[in-house]
Image 1 (cartoon, one colour):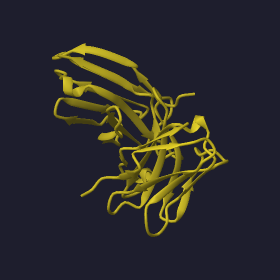
Image 2 (image 1 turned 135 degrees about the horizontal axis):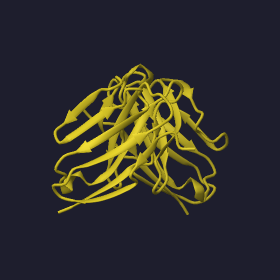
Image 3 (image 1 turned 60 degrees about the vertical axis):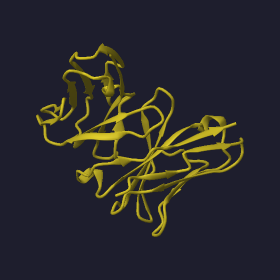
Image 4 (image 1 turned 45 degrees about the horizontal axis):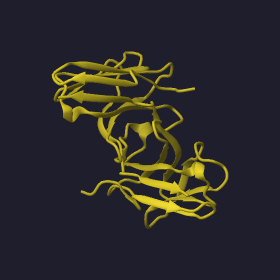
Length: 116
Length: 110
C-alpha cells in the first residue's frame, strides 16, 4: 500500500519560471492538503482540496499560487513566476476522511524547491 | 502569533534518560496529532488523540491530551539514539485542517 507520493523530490527553477509540484494521495484518500516548510520553521497550511473542489485556500498567497485536484490524476500545486522567497519544502498530505471528522493525515516526502 | 507552542525548542539528552515535551495552546482542538520528522523527509504520524484526558502508548512513547483539549504532552522513557528527530504537534481546529507547532528538536546522545 503505497504512501503519499510527491514528485519531483527536488526542483530547481530560475526566477520568473513556473514550478509544478505533484502529489498522488494514498489509495482511497480523497482529501489532500498542501503545506510549506521553511528552514527551522513549522509547517504552514496552504490549501485543502477534496476531489475537484478547493475547500480552504486561506493559507495560499493570492497571487502566483494555485492548486487543483482533478477527478483523475494527482493534485498539482502550481507556482507561477517564482521568486527566491518561494524556496522551501512543500509537503502534501492526504486523509481518507475529513480531518474535522477525525481523519488522520499522512504526509509525503516533500518537494524541495530552490529558486536561483 | 503561534497557535500551538511547543517546548522546549531544543533538547539534548543522554541515552537512557526520560524526557517530556509539551504542546500548548489557548485554543480548543477537536483532535491533535504528533509527528516525527527527520532531515530531508516528511513528517511521520505517530499518534492521534481525540478525547480530553486521553492517554495513548506507543512502545516507550506516552502521549496525553489535556482534559480541556488545549494541550498535549509526549513522554519518552529510556530514550535511544533512534529517537532523535524533530517532534511536531498539530491540532485540528474547527476551521483549519491542521495547525502545526514549530517542533521540539530532540538529540539523544549514545
